[in-house]
Image (cartoon, rainbow, N blue to C red; front, side, top):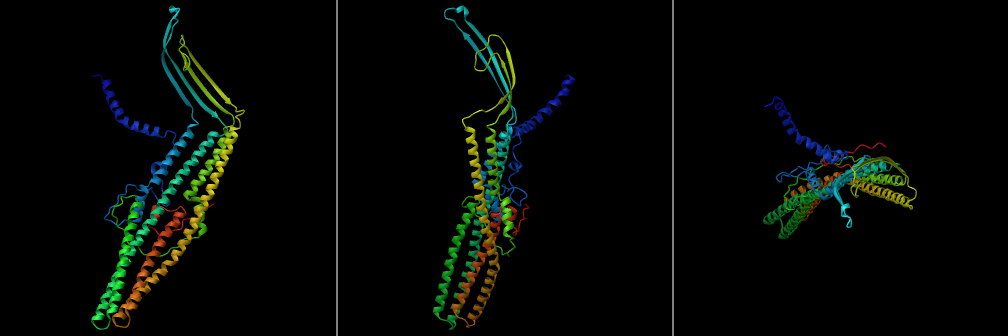
Length: 484
């Protein structure tokens, strides 16, 4: 075999091995040749305070108590509204690419193979048949306008930014819904624990009343009264268990899991209130970075660019064009002689009168911009109003935490005292039952205050647009104030 041919074999093998990688690179380039895709479209949107997008590869182990962060991750990755906003991002990315493409030249061409037959019924000797082809090619380039393309490109960029912010806002809305379902389930679980403890105390009271009756120190009416209180505590425990089962089912559905999925929840941990910061600082932060306001503001800016584009459409434009014709023109018959024709030119188009069409297009664009401005102001009012309420709720719930702890401690001391006094015959059964009822109420209030505080601190962050997965299990920290 020829030595030169042998030397070509490694080169051919290398070309074959590298071809799939080269084709993959070409395929990626063809999917986005103008680089319109933002980095977040490839990597995912990162929530405030997070280092990475939600990890949708999370698989819950039913044998392990579910954490709030894991529940949030599951809820974010299988939510229809989140998928809708993600698709809207892709739609706006295509709009950005289309706006960028307006700066590039365009080319088109056609090839036609045909057979032309001409007959003369009275003079058959004059009949003729021509077989051949014609070719047409053109190149066009929009060279100059008065800002129409630039305005459309700016508008597309603003709409893409609005779509990204809307997606982030929807993520936080999902987190907000999950927070409500999560802490409702946690509160009902803690209520079950509290009711179970109250039921146990009520049964102890029945046993103590029976012992006193046997010893002659009590009456049968005391036993009946203790049994009534015990039955009432058992009924309250049963109702609490039902409320917990319902709240857990709602939580499972909110996370996007099958309705019958079993989940274990951790106990509601005791915590203390943390400083929540000044309301003005929170409002300033929300006004500048809340994703709903960012989205509305970007849509307003996009509408303003549409006004600029509409104005430019009524002004002169300059276009370059080149055309090639071979053997005739498109949609016409073949010429008898082979020929080629090439044209090259620059066209200046000056609109003179369009029946006031462009005038009304500008007015329509202005009105649309006014609508977007009003929508932004309305969204701003709603977001800041929700933030004011959330800040007030956080303040109130923080103040209630210590009071609820004092209530529990005092009630526990009262029950212990009443149990000793009743066992020693120094207190009535009614005093013991009242102390036990107060303790059950104290536990309920403690659960409510802990739930209110945890919900309020997270919803305060969500109302300011600052809630992320990494901040769910951390104490509330005031975000830095935005410099104007």
